[in-house]
Amino acid sequence: MQKLVATDHSVQISGLQKQFTRHDSGEVNRVIDDVSFAVPKNSFFTLLGPSGCGKTTTLRCLAGLETADRGEIWMNGQAVFSAAAGRDVPPDSRPIAMVPQSYGIWPHMKVFDNAAFPLRYGRKTYPRPETQRRVLTMLEQVGLSEYADRWSTQLSGGQQQRLALARALLCEPEVLLLDEPLSNLDAKLRSQLRTELRSFQQKFGVTTIYVTHDQGEALAMSDTIVVMNRGRIEQIGSPSEIYDSPATRFVADFVGSANLIPGVLDRPAGSRDRVVDAKTTLGVVRCERFTTPPAPPTAGQEIFVCVRPENIRVITASREAEGPNRFPGRIMTAEYLGDRQEMVVTVGDVTLRAHADAHFDAHPGDDVTVVLDPAWTVALWS
Ligand code: ATP
Image (cartoon, rainbow, N blue to C red; front, side, top):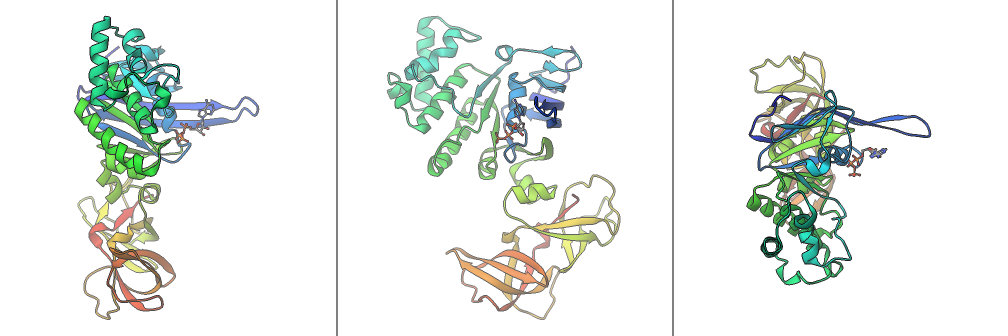
């Protein structure tokens, strides 16, 4: 089979499709629908989306635990799956290691034996002294060397997670697949371990594909995020691209908190235009951010304006209209949070969530001016 993938990508998926059919009703559920992406070598690549959007199924197709109906999967320049060519390399012959949500640690084994398992029975086995050396070095690197002789059930949640990671890394995989590995841990440990996981990934330089429904985790850890919804890709980008320039309403709403205001395009935006003006019930809103439109935009077409609360300023009511995106509003609620106030402000019949200065002296019922920062106001095409 021909080599398709650029060598700077560890994994490439193209046109992947997978459906399940219910035995009782015969109802067909397409859980992955034309999914394509390329994962750069040594990067931390995250599949993010709500429960049921098809993240785990995509990961299982990569691992070879699920067989897709259509499409291709390439790893290191080799096709490991091609529906058209009838090729499906079994999981143990793919250059991957997977850490499932439950960690898959054997309770009847000690920590050392759990970690050593792939070196004794896996793809590549080693003589005893070499196994011993590799396992102890790895346990040291993940901070578990003093636990080597403990039963794995005696480890805390965080330690089990590190053991699962150590065992996966001992397989020397080209690609590490992680399915919500932090979801069983409490909030404090999650945030500590996500930093740790990211630094392990950088230390070992292993291409990592990470599945999560937690947008905070995805933003904090990833080089690239794929946002999925109902089996389809909504957007692929860096954390700041996803957060600051969402491509769709779904992304804007799922990642972070967003005010979404319906409107129509005031005038056709040319391909060189850096600004989109939207007519909304607030008035004309200038948007200096937008992704490439799927089709040439036309005046009057329906769009959405997206602006995050931190990009709306609430200031003393002023009659002067200096600059764009200033609208008269009224404070409905104000919550003091120490470093800022979170406010709900109405402008006509539009309700906006906004942040105000912690010491801004205004109260519910007061008239104010809201300013939507044009540089951070996004026009959404869908
Ligand atoms: P979660 O975060 O809850 O794990 P997910 O995004 O990983 O969600 P998947 O586990 O990929 O979602 O599931 C996608 C859809 O496919 C769900 O509706 C699920 O019920 C369905 N599904 C998954 N596996 C099967 C199966 N073996 N048979 C039938 N339906 C399945």
